[in-house]
Image 1: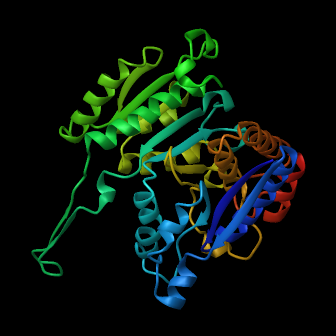
Image 2: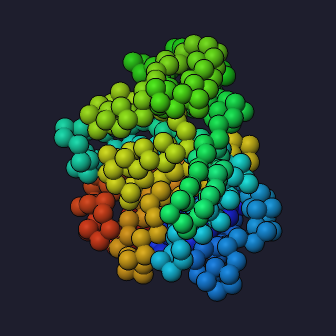
Length: 367
């Protein structure tokens, strides 16, 4: 029996509620596939900060490095100034654990919940790979004359060849294996699903951001020469958002920088049915990775047992896939699809037709 130690951070608001349901489903999958998941819980979040004044202990990062994966609920507390928890917990973990990939599958499970006219599950099934350690999120910059009429604020986007190359390498390899269970370095053209060639789209702004995305574009094309089975595409980020709405079926795997990725993945969540179904992973391919629902802490729903736990459940499935347990991950996703299509009236909080715990029960039973 394989054993995995998992760090669990319920966090704020409805975070602990959805994590509870994710663990319920993970335990069902673990039992079916003869796995042992050992959870260690941490109380990092708004309540701890308000109680102790401490955002993230200095010892926390080293302790979290001992785990292959972290399951996170949500960070964000109404009584804590915006930015304190997000920078002090989320960004610090992403940067110090070198989770340099943010992976966001965008997959429609039921056309009833898609806001786009005439789009079906086969039309919305792509993945966004967002560079997660650089760009505008490094915090480079500062103020001059702060608080005066002559105030200046500068925020710089940092893009390194090392950071771009490792993000692109992950993206190319992900695009290769997305259409085959064969490892990418043993993949042959005939192994790729018939009629679905691997495609990687770089989304940026080469016409305006002529330094950063010149580097991205050159690196993309240079690396692409080593992946002849992958079709290379480029799209400006504004065109990408337009095509998400008009022609989402054009996309397979998209790679972009930190800021653009942050924005465009929320649009991706909406066209797949909303935040209630949107999961993401913060990946260090060779280290500790963190998986979470991409929605916020939703404090107005805290304790009401009405929040949709499916995004957290899907994050749990992504975690199992990262750990190499693809069959268990697939079983969870299939169970989610079954419940979404067969049971739920809506994916919105309070409108599902079932409570948070009941949805967790349904998925766990289906697994």
